[in-house]
Image 1 (cartoon, rainbow, N blue to C red):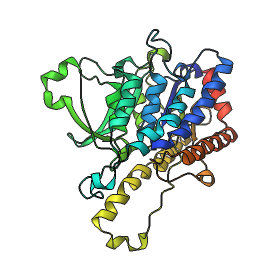
Image 2 (tube, rainbow, N blue to C red; image 1 turned 60 degrees about the horizontal axis):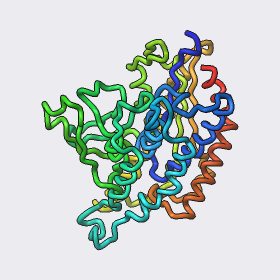
Image 3 (cartoon, helix red, strand yellow; image 1 turned 120 degrees about the vertical axis):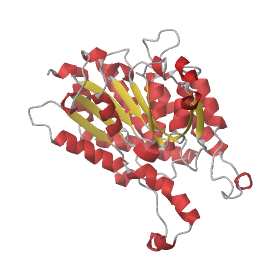
Length: 354
């Protein structure tokens, strides 16, 4: 099959304020592509974007249609980065609940009020629904009602499944102990026939897929891409750019005595382990899949993440103070430098060839 029929996929990890790192890389990606094809944006060069948590928010920003001309992007990659730099403190630092409100976490483990992020998402996306995003999209969450993973997609039958983008993003970013679960509704017309199925109580998709690349791979295998001659791609017909958020920097204190940890100690530690545990595993699995392709079979996969020696920022993914924002921007530049060494520009040239 010819290279031009490859399905071009972008996947973005979760990581809270560390979304600054992939946003920095993608600012460069968009500028590089625009040098070759002026007046284009990221959505013009990818057929499918998948994201978890902060990666889900970025996905929606890149795919939001312009209010006047839906064939064009509403936001640039530069505006996506600005959103994190300018609004990070409002989402986290200024929304932090004090210990009296939480009774030191004994009554309420949630650290942040969701009011600010809900307001920002409403301001940015209004009543935009998933089916109106510019390209196929997958955003992860965990549905507490059905006790199962759930994938918001933009290719569903909107008469049966339809959601406001703002609700989807509130769901995918509802990290345990950070924000309370998101209570949302399926607004599709036929959802009224089964009210129980219309109501959802959702957690951050990072509890099972902080790196959503394998989810994207599985979804792409079962999706017909109209712009690619209705192709349902195999691994050899996918062109995947996967970008991480430089996770894994948290410390586990007193782990030598973990057999005697209290319930509170486990409750504090488990969310970090869950959110980071699958990232490297999925990257390894994707490398193994592509390693099975014969040398003469086309297939491309590039994983970009922050080098361990450059993870000098806070391990707290909710730390949006001015100094940490600067360190994350610096880490984004270091991530970009390493990505170029690993062949990012060549990958983007291949993306253009497709």
